[in-house]
Image (tube, rainbow, N blue to C red):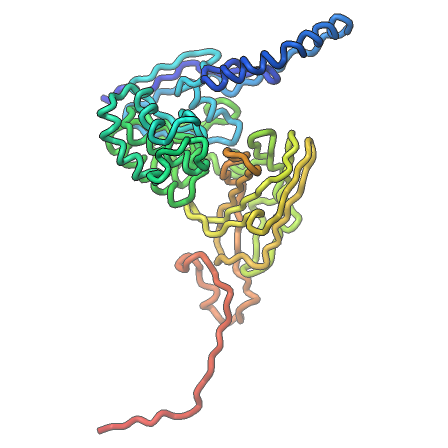
Length: 438
């Protein structure tokens, strides 16, 4: 009978909004000391001001990222964790990885954990790629000979051979993710934890990572995988946990949990607003000036307008919006404001509307997934990772065909999804061809 790899009992994590929390990572400790040194004179002046002021400031409000979580994960299980942004997924992984402590409850882990949570997590920015590989192995308790044995595989998988002697701080976010995943996967931990950070990589690298995780699962190791990619979760995971508002809303077979999660009635996959980092949120999506819903359809080859209303709590002078239309795991079309040199600026508390005017969607009739991603200029981390926000339904336009032309009315399921705009020219040769018989 399989043993428990992770056991969670009554686990909860609380934050006080507006209060700086002391961290356990070296960078957090250093920044905390620096902040104290800078703010000490300011705090002294505030104390004098408070002495003259009759009213005290309001107490800090509390926010529970999650509370009263109870679940067990067996050795060899591949568990997908799904939920909207802000549901508590990333915070849970940080607690399980011992990066932050829980406020209440307890959990136990059997075996070494290797985690890939954020771009650059676990790397020392001043050390080279080579040095960080060895440092990560030492942190996992491996001997130098063990790390050396895996070194070439890590470098080959990550594709960073030319940059091994370069400080990691000069790596792009994609290079950091590739190297981070390779280290986490090839140093053979008993438990591998991967957050949605893989969305930073390109589509081919994501497929490569999913293939490697499948190979790790076949070796009997435990994997916890957070993703907004429903197809990847269903394909790779043997179990799925759905977090909603910091509690477990579903736990079981991936197909049934994902079906409920994506249900228009009780699911929260497509509910708006969708919140990202730094207070950014997608507040509404309009199709042809009407809020996107399951009842809307787009006529085959007809034009359409997609409008995205974006809000932010902080000023963001240069936002980049990316829109993907696809089927399952396969993106079929990507629209990007940066491709067209369009800059999006959002002020504090303001809302900006971005409209993409599409002359003709190049897809045959069917239902296609709509996903969004938001980035800020110069930021290594996404403001909003690729997130499903709805579906686009394309239906046949029978006006394109005669009523007697039944071939056009046949089902489109057997055809490839992408339609290429084209015309046909048919010329008939009226001359009769003579045939020669011997």
